[in-house]
Length: 82
Length: 151
Image (tube, rainbow over all chains, first blue to last red):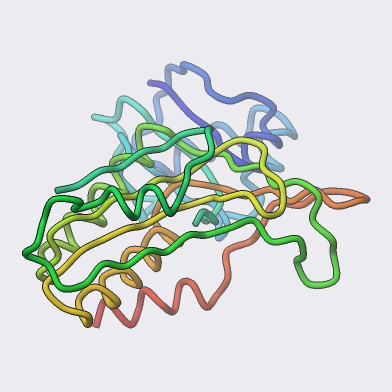
């Protein structure tokens, strides 16, 4: 599963993307797993109200959403384009 | 007809406007909106603006927004360009040209597209000031604009 990070989530984690193997079944479990790695990840995910999630390029607004079919998951703050 | 371009290079809003529907005579309204980098944010002077994006998703989201626009109004063509990379005040960021039968759908459709682009297209801005830098935060107003359309 490929994980992408953007904007300040990317800066805090310290990398753009990574390929991971995980036993996490939901978005929330994946976030908990990533956060437990080290302080960069826990800082990136410290305010979950500021974290948006996209699974295979589609917004998911429920942290209980299943990731078992996911190929690509992205974490980023609310968007500010235009 | 739908055209979506996400690019680092600059574009010419006037040239795009003139080229859209050049040979058509079946429309009554044509709208151009261009978003430009401003040189201020509250009391800070902006020297540079960095725009980051999520390429595959940005294209898909813009396409989805435009498809919803076509369903909602009798709009015949939408042409969007959005830039990424390091820009300066005065630089073009985003360009929208659309044509429709009449004025109301053209103006409403343009607002609809820009409102959704602001809250659902994966682009992020980081401002560089004389001293320091900061990621732009999403305005509450931008989220409220969407709520109006959802009703």
